[in-house]
Length: 488
Image 1: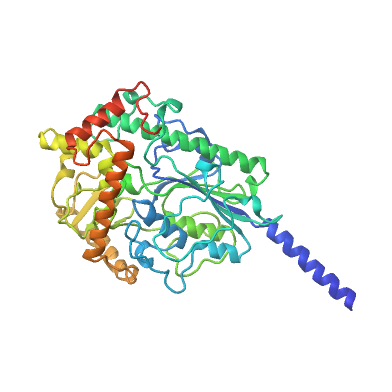
Image 2 (image 1 turned 60 degrees about the vertical axis):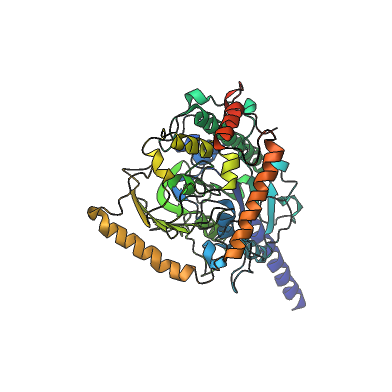
């Protein structure tokens, strides 16, 4: 009897170990500020062989979106699996942070309870330092280490690999040369040499991100972990350019999502379904065989439990000293943006963009000279319409607002009613910043601007005119053979 009992216990223990070893590892490779400017997404000006290979070996989503056009809001959503206002994380680097609401926990805790070793490392330091977090809530997100090397034998891991690029400041282009004279600028930007140089520098940084993707895929391959690892590759928000990052247009929200897992994810496949970054959170749990909490807003987008998403939602609130309140919804064909602070100009002061974006100064100078042509001058208006509606198929640059066109009233009403109804639920825990908090944010941004200017552009005064700022950018961007040497 005792012998049988011992045998049973031993069998159960061995079964448990085998089961643990069979659980797939889950890896998130998060590239900061990455749009869809990749070879596999059709961009011919950039060389991204490692990401392209990832797409060939997995499924590439071509209608995939971030939930917010800025990092901390997007990352707060991903790590919780819910939309940012639901966890009071809607303002960029929230000043009055709160704990996560009862019942909502970081996805890291769910993985830990399932026996996973949980890590977060920065690729900039080869996973020897903690990776970027940027969560807008007080609740601590706990990790076991920077990479998976400290786990127990056979223990599955959930690893986040944080790639800094292509976030500004861009990399030195001498190692990843992209010729500004040969790039194709997106049609949402006017064609000026300084914008070509800036765009080329962005693409060079995308290529640098690709190098790092290759490095970590090679590591997984060398360690014999790749075939039992679900790899999710994505950008945390859209590209870092004017009218893109911090805005709910396609350039600010559209990101790549690529999933590789030979055991259950189709290889060399293009998925046209709508996808959202919070779907990565939910899909990661599902692929690991972990029950998805009911409170999560994401949907499973890969594997046997995949479903189709009907809408994708976007959220934008205060970012630095630029105070906004915007929401968006798209069904893949039409995009509706609800500007709940329509009295603010699109080009209201944002110290970060004034410091880092040459286009911010260029637009100001051209507009004052009366040289900023249509449709680019639309962005200089001092107020915004309450509702913007765009046909993404016919007008992918989102210049022609159809909100007041009779023909589109039905689709406008359908999208707006859906958005408005859902906000009532998702914003129950949202705490709006008061005047004192907003003032504190603006003062902090001013201080950041002055300190950064002193450190990175000592030749410029904090009171420099836009003409002087533009001239400085022209020297930095156009007077060098390699076009971009701002990051030393």
